[in-house]
Image (cartoon, rainbow, N blue to C red; front, side):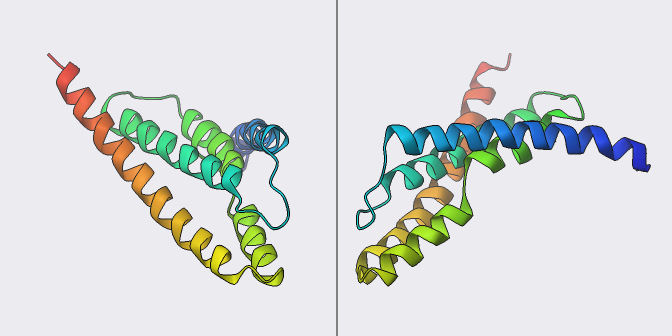
Length: 135
């Protein structure tokens, strides 16, 4: 790819990231988490983002021929900005440092299982729905 061809991709990833991160921040304002509480909001955001990614990737790879900037905009930008490994890691550190080791470990495992389960089940359900709807 030539250098000038990279800039539209960079621009749509940045725009999508701003949208996704703003949505995640909005979720944290609507459902704040107390310092010693289980971070349900971050867990929910990550699981929803993974489910949407499962749907999105099936639609892109099996149903649509998307514009070349759609995947970087929505997948990398919006969903990358919406889901958050850094907040997840900071939440675990905060819980463990605050003496809530079991809660931190439960959150670590729950997020991993729920996120992988969400992307897998959403992709599976989308494939079934797409196959059912095809003539």
